[in-house]
Image (cartoon, rainbow, N blue to C red; front, top):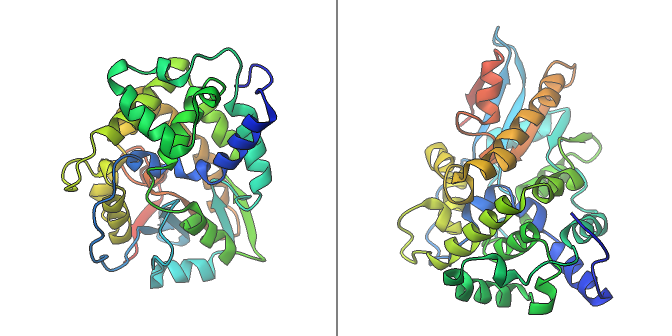
Length: 317
């Protein structure tokens, strides 16, 4: 949280420039933010996870779609079930509705991301990780003077963004919102609230976040073996294929393996979203709930939370 003026106007412009696209890349992409991409392989047939939500008596009430927030241009992901949901749903629930309002997002990020009196970024990480940090800072365009103004969580997101392997401009969330032109779109969180999740982390958790981003980048395995979160290409393949087991693995490894960060960045947010999702399902409109896939899968995901409330959640293939 900003403790004072962020410094020179040039630093503000620098932060605003880097803020663009950083928000949604920090959701599921954070589980796979690190590592060099291996050479692209033929994409599997598109089959992303989308579920029908039905009441206990089997009456269809809406849909739950696990999105990915950054993709390479030209990625084909729409399937017949997704297309039907986009056509038939009467209400859309997303994490952030105003993704096109870049100015507001950038101003919010710049305001929250800066403080006075911070140590230079290298002093906030173990000496053994400083060479990897320096390489990431260079790639992200973060200079030494700038780093002393940037809060630890914000620096972690900036560094993660350089490793995401896709563009938020081509993310599924934007495409889904665009498809709902003329219909109601509600946000479950909003840009300011999403950034506040990171901004209110303890400094210890923020440094854990930074450590995981930097360590993951330094330990990447170019063969693509090992943890899926170390390879953005593998994550995209798992998302495109609707590989639920692989997506659960991604949501439990890397940054999200840290208990404190997992609670703040994933589990608590799922719980907070449940009530508005339930309200939409109980209304006359049939909603499409489209949020990052990490928020959908696993024992603490929205699909499981809805089943605990008596709904039937069935994959559509």
